[in-house]
Length: 108
Image (cartoon, rainbow, N blue to C red; front, side, top):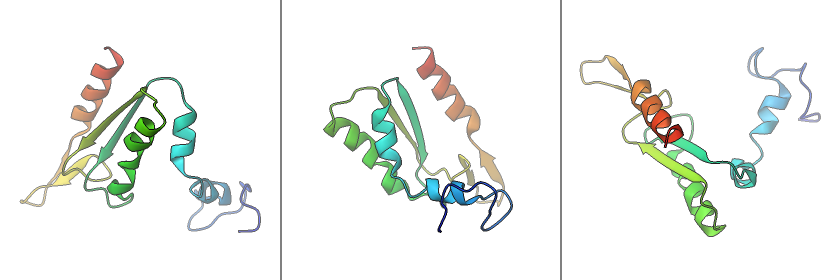
C-alpha cells in the first residue's frame, strides 16, 4: 500500500479505507502502554476474528512494564460478538454480562 494514510481509497469494501487497514500494522500494546488512565480490556476466548492468545500478552506486558492500571477480563467460550452458538443452533448473546462487569468496574 503506497499511501497508508489515504482515506478516500478503499480495499475490500467501501467502509475499509487504506488508513483503516494500515492502522492494523501497529501493535496495539504499544498504544495501550502509553495510557495512564484505568483500562478495562475484555476478550473472548473463542474469537474467530482475533486470536485470543495474542490478547494474553496485554497483561503480561503491563506487569513487565510495572503498570497497574489494567483490568483484564476473559470471557470463556464466547466469540467475537460476545456470544456463543448453543447445541440447538440458536445464538446466545452475553453483552449484558460484559456490560454489567464493565459497569461494576467503572463504579468501583
